[in-house]
Length: 392
Image (cartoon, rainbow, N blue to C red; front, side, top):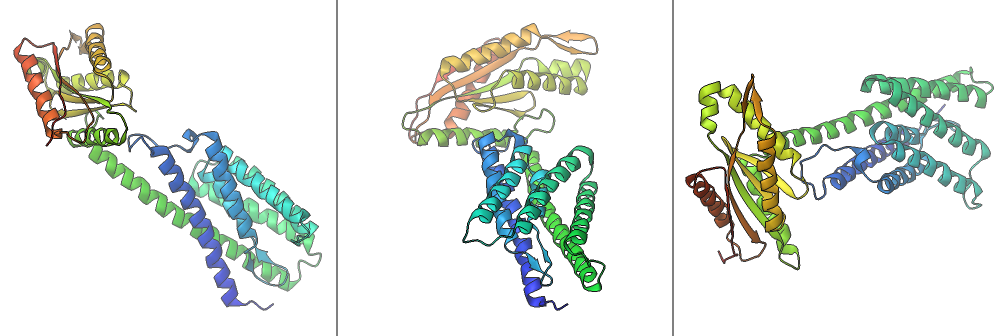
């Protein structure tokens, strides 16, 4: 048995590149689709994509699997390593049910077209081998996802079942299979398939892990560690983002900024301790989250017992929301170790609309001034003002 090692190694690198590039392109396209318009404030899940988009991803992976089937790694005149099955398995393992089934059915459909088309020579044995092994990978992928509880266990199970099935197909295809040349060819096939599979999973794992680590660090820099709300700098960032997006619209867009301060918060810390103060802030953050809509509202902790709210709403809607928050606090008191307290808020709110002629610092300063005016007037009230855009 003669192996052209240059062609052999070249084919391995081509297959490895197609597999890794395919999965990472799909991963990052999915990530981009999920976070589009939602910044980095959500957990990314493939199932959150709409079904047509998932089916489209599966179709693309199926087409790439077909390309792999025409770039098999040659061992001898009869044996070639077909890595398209790795791509189908990855569609099950890394993606969703819709994507994986779309991948498998796309590959079967394309191979059927190739089998029927007179211009493309596909033998009946090759065609049915494709159908059987594609469906086998579907079954293996389903079982692995359902019963295997770790990445290593899943990959080991797939490799074992696939290679056993391949061994059986060898014995059926080559009646004289125990003959030494076929045994050597199968051994090389096994080593090559495992090497490409392990290398692919390792490279994909490194890329995804690095991406997720970046998101973790971003999350740590975005959120307040106690309440889970946006921190001061993040709220400023999203205020600017809302203003930037509004400037792109044909018509001016309404926007409101509210700064909220808990009345007599120092008394909670002094009488019940700082742990009670922390629990009060957590209680407030839960109420804020329950009564705001994440795609048009941004809420953050500015420091201490002071919070900020950026609202892409009309002035009437914004004030109605803040009154709802105040009403909720009265109906659901804060309880700590048997002590019941009704927390109240002083609020300074500025209403405006987006414009390229806008002093962005002024909206923050004016909201802060209105908050302290509310404090001065006796607390537990909201003072608002419409601020007309002015040139910087």
